[in-house]
Image 1 (cartoon, rainbow, N blue to C red):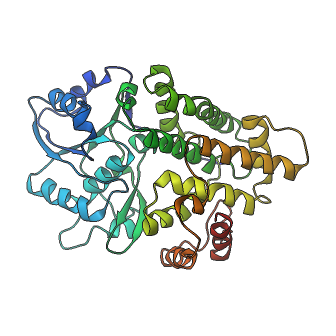
Image 2 (tube, one colour):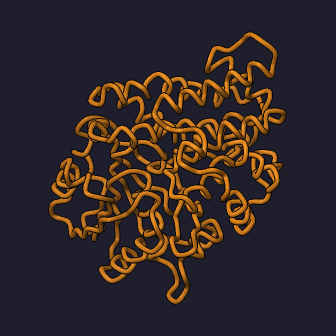
Image 3 (cartoon, rainbow, N blue to C red):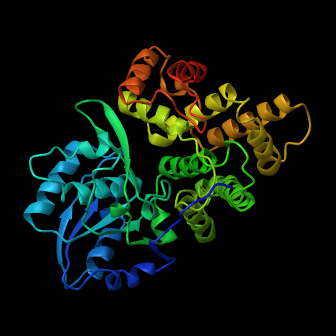
Length: 387
């Protein structure tokens, strides 16, 4: 196991009616900017509950943050935050709203005259302060409610970039599984796939004898495999929704990634698919992951065999047969959730692969993976295998 420095300061308020404790988390003199996405939080009444909980505070609303939140939209919120001297941000929604709010938090404190897109260009290294923030989660998927990372898109340039900085770590997150009952099946499925891939990005690498992290990761994967289909079939099953929500948070709060090698190449290749073609984030992960594992099976052999045995109970056959079976089982699980696993499932024939590779090169993604051995040529092979 590698050395690590783990600090997970986000307070989790979990369970039915957890919003009752929301007000106590925000300073009495705060000027609060509440951020959200489309109209779903209004239709479901979640936004009304949030605003009611904030009674007595100065509150400003900013809606319209898109899936794959755009720099262009977020800069409008940055302008409001500066003009209104906002001192606290509250994100109400899923990972996109949370990611966007993290950018707002950092960009609002950014130096005048400097384009905050620089935050994405340097991965968050230039952030020295940010507006404090919390969240009310309505879509379990990204784990953004309890980590310091975010991904932002820029429509005008076709870029999708990530950043990380401890200044944008949410102070708290309200996780009420009831808020997920009304999610459309597509969002439920995407959330399960997203959490699943987050987990294997930190698990299917190479062994470092980190038994606790491995067992935690396997527990998350088994929970998602068991509960994911139930979440589609039994939308208002509280126990199912609670387990899916907690699994998604645990998948990316830093715990299972502490002291182990991490991959994230599937995400980097997936980001380019979203930026160029507009696919959902989880859809791109489902497309890239099986192909990446197939191409990189030699360097990932030990962990793929462990994954096959412990997650899918695949113990018979040659090493390659067991790896093939594990990849097939993963693909079938994604497809059972209604998420396609090939470019052709989304009407793409692979003709854009040269553009995808060019963007990877532009973004400096020339050596990816836990061994930094996924070159542009290997990335091309992965995209081609995903057709």
